[in-house]
Length: 215
Length: 221
Image (cartoon, rainbow over all chains, first blue to last red; front, side, top):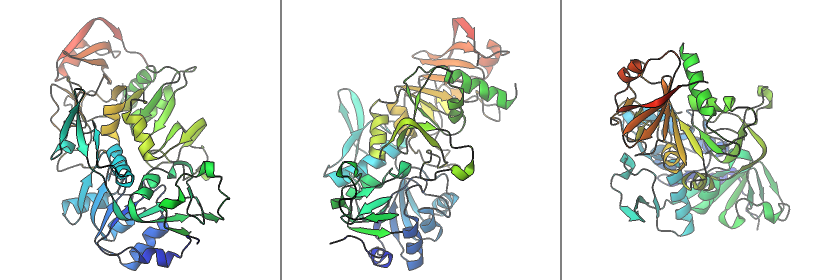
């Protein structure tokens, strides 16, 4: 029962209108082959949850430049002018979320937690429309969990049971996203047999991962 | 002083704040340069919010760049011996949880209450806040590195920020090309003044309440 599948099968699971989490930070740790395949397949009206807007020709920026994204939830979009352009033209909605809050909302989504209290954003526009709860004299914002239909991860190595290892700073949002989507698909550079990754050194437990695609 | 010399004064002065073992997160731009001026004998650990401790310069030969190892601006860097990687949840647990001793950030505006606005200009620049809001709230000490005035000569140290805030009451110290200022309940307290600058010049270039310390020292790099 190997989780390894083809690029074609894996990408056929991403449908129009879905909410998709994409791992990576400024495209480092983003599964680029998946971005290319989605552009090619013509999937549209996606809601993308990613740390940032990538670059015009890199990471989720490829989906944005090709007008496949109806909404982007991210912490930073400054390196991709295509995002600002679409914000101004109102052709793509953008929800900006502080980076730590974005990571923790995803973690909550995958960990069965109904929300969390953070001091981040208090007294700023981030506070608008949110419940403020005071604990021990400190005001906190109630932030709610995020989940997705699909999570697309960029790993380094996988075994056939889906256990994942990331390399260097590619890890970033990939591990929390692995826990917070209905279907989780990882692109890796290397696939090994179960047991070949020391269980002490697995970064994402295989039970979170549905499909593996070898780059 | 030309712009380069002024900036060097700022980053060198900030680099003297740290002691060995401090965990420091440096923002993009001028704050990044602080790393190049940490005094000999002081070893700090640089935290990179995209997921590691122990940020180090990239190899000098671009052929040796490891594109799996980048800073929060997406540029290739290195990692020190003993450094380690982690995911974004752990990274921001480190930041929010008070495990970062210092963060150094640039700014558009900072006010005498320690509130700061450095993430957007409505209608013009909306890059997103990235990790700045978390860093400002979570770091034990927040140092702002900035030119004292804007390109047009307008004060950046204000009575109250006008742009949308990044954080409320978060800044501890502001270091500019005119001096070193602590944010106190009464306003910006100038502890050091840059060489060749007069108190009258600082007053004219500052919109917030300014307190001159009687033991005012000259700010050195």
